Length: 447
Image 1 (cartoon, rainbow, N blue to C red):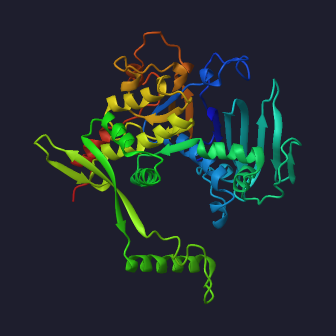
Image 2 (spheres, helix red, strand yellow; image 1 turned 135 degrees about the horizontal axis):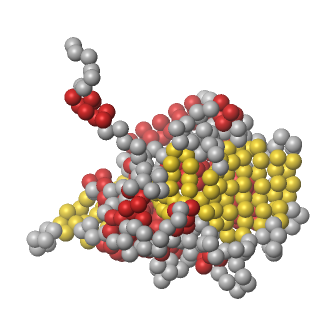
Image 3 (cartoon, rainbow, N blue to C red; image 1 turned 135 degrees about the vertical axis):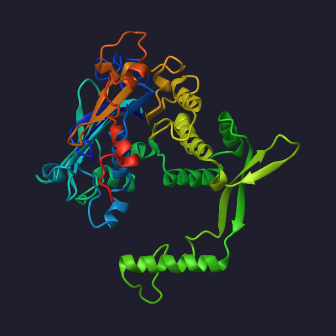
């Protein structure tokens, strides 16, 4: 899957509609000329810069929400009391207005446009179009208020009525329903997310462990990926440990009580899948162990992920999904890519996607960052103006997204320096005078 653009409106601070466009300026028509590849008309990298709390992370969060809605609105979201959503909160009108998400993407050589609107009760609108020739064709159209749900005759879908709080594509994913199911799977599998918090990084550690256990990833591959970062890891192995029966019994009891709280008391002998724990609770626990070798002879130490540095875990949580999308295609969205990583290592990460000899699948990396090194003449990464984006937040809390291409610029301009000088906006408005009062109590009342 290739992402052409992502448009969002009324998601957290993104009150007004913004579009992150990944297409190259040379794409003048709806699709490339016959015989040419889509990958040559789409950027593999897009970087989003801006001051703290201006909405950089909100762009990634909105993309995560759109992908999650396709994956989970027909399943996990149905268990909740209401539709998960995050509209702009600072005015009453936005709280009552549906949130809008649109993904333009390429799947198996064909261009698609998928969009949906979600309000407090559920899905308000949903539409899917493709481009079989020179004109758009509507495959799916849904308008809940007008009670409209129409499919193109060529779809041959088996999907009937859908619940208000589920997307048609999510139901298609659940049912593995023809083309709709294939597109839903492409959107589910086509996005990977990496965020600078321990919960996200812990999840990637767990996913990495599972991939090693299931042989989807080899230890030697992971060691090689970690050696790129020069962090002193000589070997990786999986430690296997039997889970004591008493521990399994306690976990089973806790799970059963949780199921009773959600579904009411269980009748005697009744079983909720996963509630009794007899089949779903693991009998064996697997954990990662990293071997570090010192400079003195054969001295070595084996450490778990919790004992590793933030930088090691940050690189691990990036490199594993990066390998996945580089091998199979798709989009990796990384929030604060420079968190706990040296600028040169960030440059290596970006180079993996920019280098066509490495990136043969058309994989794409969307990242947010504060680090201007990549924008400076010192960096080997050359980003076109259309690949550099900025966020700025207005006085009423609304995030604006705009591109470096919107500004006049000389060919040899030092973008990093001009950015730090505030020529493109997206820099913090500092109130350093407050610090003196905070530290020394200037102007504060005595006593």
